[in-house]
Image (tube, rainbow, N blue to C red; front, side):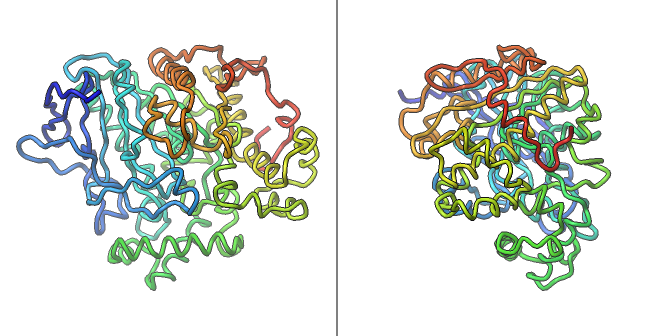
Length: 499
C-alpha cells in the first residue's frame, strides 16, 4: 500500500527549526546536525557546537555519512554500504509518533561497522517501527577510522566517542521537542556500536545521559593503550608522508586519508607483528585497527574493568549475541574453507585461544569442519563469553541485567553476526540481502517487543539474569528460555577474561 503523507511538522532544536515529514502516523526528521562539520582542522578536534541556521531547515533526506571505505568483498554483498556525500556527517535521524506530545521513551541507536564502516543511513536502521510502537528513535553518526580514533599528537583521543557523547547531550537537550522523555533514554548498538555502549557505560563523561543500555554482539574489552595506538598513527603518517600530528593530518585531503587508512589496515592484516602495531591493538581489536583507547579521560580504564568495578551502577543492561557470530567473517569471505585441521591451532592462536580448547567443541560438533570449529570458538572468545561475563558483572553490583541469544539461522550462513538487527528494528524487508527470503516475522515481533519493553520500563519480558543463568534464545521452532546453554564450553577461560 502506498504510504500516506499527512503532515510537515516543524520543531525547534539546537541550531534552529527543522521540518520533517509525517507518513502513516510517524514523523521523521532526517539528517539533523548535532555538531559542526568535522572538516579541515576540525576533523581531528573534539566536536564543536552546531552552526545555526536561519528560517526552517528541511529534514526530509538522509544526511551525509562519515568518511569510510567499503566492507571487504563477501561481507559487502551482505551488509552493503549506504554512503551519502557531504560534510555535515555529524547528524542524527529522529522518528517519533507525536512531536507535539511528551513523556515517550527514547532509544538512541549507535551503528556498528568495526569503527570503520556504517552510518545511520542504512535502510535497516529506519526507526519507523519503533515510532509506530510509541518510542522516539534517534540514530546517530560518529567519526570513523583514523578520523575518529587515530592517536595523533595535538589531537584528543577517542574523537568518535566524543561525538557519541555530544550526540547524547543533544538528545538530552532536544528530546522534548520530539515528544520524548530525556530522563528515559536507552542507548543500544550492535558490534562496534555495542562496544561503544560498553565504553559509554565505563565513561564518567556519560553519567546521566542515559538510563538503560543494550549491547548486541559486542565486547567490553575493546580498548588499546595510547602508546600502542600511537604506533598505528605513526604508520599512517608514514604512508601519507607527513608527521603523525593533527596539524599535518588536517592538511591531507579526505580521499588521501581514506586511501592511506585502507592501506594501513591491509598491511595490519597481512603482518600482525605486535612490535610494529602494539600488542594491545592486536589483542583487544581482534582484527580491527582503529578503535577506542584508554586515554585516562573519556576512558579511564578498559571498559570491562571499569564495569566490573561498578561503573554505571544502576544502569540496567540487556545484552546478547548471535549463536554463530564469526561465520559472517569466515563463510562469505572463504576463510572457513581455507582453514585445515592442521592449520586450526595456528588460526586460533591469533585470538589467544589454546589448542586444548578444541576437544570439547569438536566433541559437541562431530560433523563440523575445521572452519566451523574456528568460527564457533572465536564466536565464544570474542562475543559470547565476554557478553555473559559482562552480564554477570552487572548482577554482582545488584544492577538488573538480561541475557539473550539469537539462534535463527539463515540457510547457508547460519546465525551470523549482524543478522538480528533487522529483527530488532522490525524491518525485515529492508535487509533481504542479509536475511535472505522469508525470514520469520514472529521473531521480529518478539525481539522488537522485548527491546521496547526494556526501554520503556526495564522489562524485556523474561527474568533478569541470576544464579539460574537463564538466556532468552530467539529461534525456531520457538523462542525459549534456556538455562546455561553449552555449559561445558562456557567453562573454558580465554585470555583477558576477568574471573
